[in-house]
Length: 372
Image 1 (tube, rainbow, N blue to C red):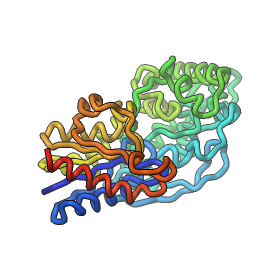
Image 2 (image 1 turned 90 degrees about the vertical axis):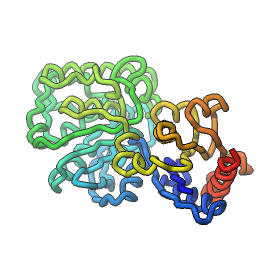
Image 3 (image 1 turned 180 degrees about the vertical axis):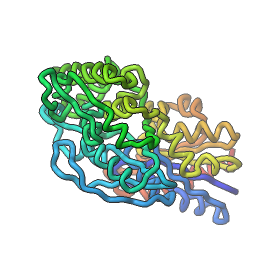
């Protein structure tokens, strides 16, 4: 029996790599001789670098400016000549105590510093993973770190932060293009939010970063002004690209200098070999901390199930909690499922004993799959 275990992280308790190890143990508890392929997955959000490291990537450390300009320790991963840069390592929400003031002030300058560092180290391509940022600056800080000049109508430099974007009158992107030097730039994301509008970066993600109604309006105005200035500078219009609102619009800033926006899960699955491993499996087991409606909209478990369905392999899921009904799980191609919350006395207990519970729940789904 060949089983593929392909979980995403269980946020707050297990990385995807740790979850895969616990699942593999659970499979062998039931079928000691099973061939178990551990393929931890990610969707371009938090935890992606952990998965890439497990796939043989090399960690590179760098100290950069955080979202409020204080220095932070960050890193990226180099694999097969490409540098994988996770935006949140430089400007993640964990680096601030979110308030209306930080929502306006936070920036992505450190992300650009990581990209510059990777290029100087010889990376022939950059994959930028987005999500979990404290910023809503449309990637302006990132482009400034790569050499862009942002000026107001008086010819003065524009300050960092999404709250300052309303002042942008002109942008010079030529220095950024020289810095990139033809290196391929790709954005990996699990969301399709546009840069602007009611589903855009400010409206949807701004409140999560401390923005109130007034701050959301200011950030929306700033992003619109920024997009217009980019177009006048000869850039691709980030407001026209699905997914450009990801990471507080940092994806949009990358699009303006030629980046493509791709499914984070598809990109990571191809790099780590999960695509290949799923083919011919007798059983595929996936999971994450919370299996819910968002999981079905581009998240890793849905991607795993979709690939397995194409090959005819049955799919089981184990999650910390499951907030989907039986019909929704079946439509996603999942035939057996278990939640750690059903085996724990409380949410805290489920997180504290996640590895043990995940192992036993995995054993349970293997037994259930065998009986079908």
